[in-house]
Length: 269
Image (cartoon, rainbow, N blue to C red):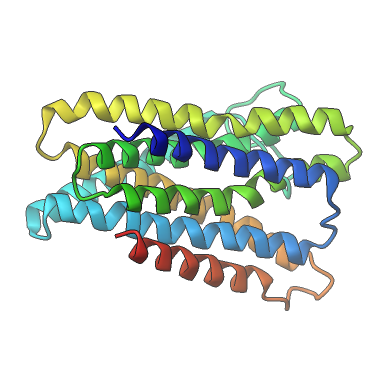
């Protein structure tokens, strides 16, 4: 284990999430167009990271024959199903929705917003843990590739951290409360990363298809979150803009995030 790189991979994404929440407290990002662009950027980064850092390494491990394709497909479907289950069970609320989702609860709206960001960060953290374990095992994932993946998460965590705090601040919540909730939301990813690392390390003793299966599970979970949450949120912000829905900031943000992460994935390969 490269402990200095492990520490960096754990700290960078967390700092980006918390930094985004601090920006939501102190900055005035008062246009839906800009918010849509940032969320679109986060979605593009997550899609590209899932492809270059998770799906392609999974195929490298499992092979591109029918058996390898079956393993990666099964993992991808498991990841999607797991996130669908969490989405149905965990009470949460998105900034652009008036109605909470998940299991009925008596939680306050700020806590529901925090849980919504936690739902975003859990699959990212689990994926980070799997990537760290893959790099430590000297499999198809190099430490350079793991660093690029961690940096990509940090890039898209900033707008996610901002997205949880900004609606609260605009609604009149105090800076102190926003700081506290932002910190709470930011802790979900490193906690999930440690869980993913521990779980992967235990299962690797079984050998065989475990690593490609876990990589594709992480990819399915991340892509589910993008399709279910980030892209609709970015487009909702676009439709709410004063341009009458004709602005393309969310689309441009997605394309920029996707290509930036794609280049990082190639450079880190």
